[in-house]
Length: 263
Image (cartoon, rainbow, N blue to C red):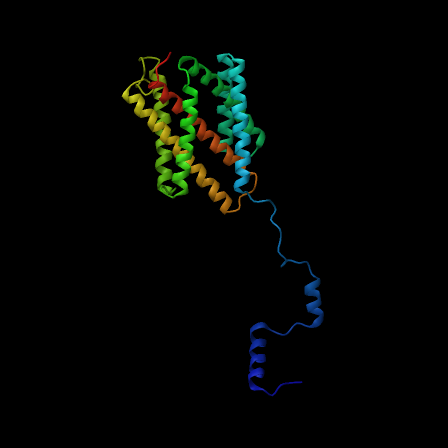
């Protein structure tokens, strides 16, 4: 029954002009029987959480510490430790440049790096008693300090900061290589790794670069959780944290050795 109300009549005319003819009951039935394209779909993967990063971080660091302790107790020969360092370097480069989330690759890096760290730590401990504990505490302090600075947003990770930090890291690694090569011809090379004011300053710079990488790791974790990264990305985050902590530990170990008398 057609309404005589001009408002309803006008509305019906406008509706027909905007949306076209009204679908028939059979068309409506076919619409609901068709595949549910409009139904919400579940994500193809579980997104990463902070707990995922914590668990994988403990697994990676646990593998590293266990391998280091075994290498220390077994007193592995220097040749084996150097070989493990080469393996760790190769696996680390693969994991870094391919952004791999393969647990076997990352845990393999942790074990190889742990063997090298266990041997070099035992050597330093043999020369200076208690230096390993000091280096571990120093690394833990650096981790806590950077985490606090990041959490309080005292330093924000910006593209400009990233470019500056990466440039500084590349320059530092380049200087280390030059110093190593010159060391074959001149005693001490550039003096970057000697017990001198230059060596002290360079070690501080290297520790700060390691802290910068930690800052990037924290930002990567936060962005990954916020943007819904896949759960497996937690392995890459754990690898980044381990890499940064190893860097800081080795530099703190060297720096402490400059100011600690051997027995």
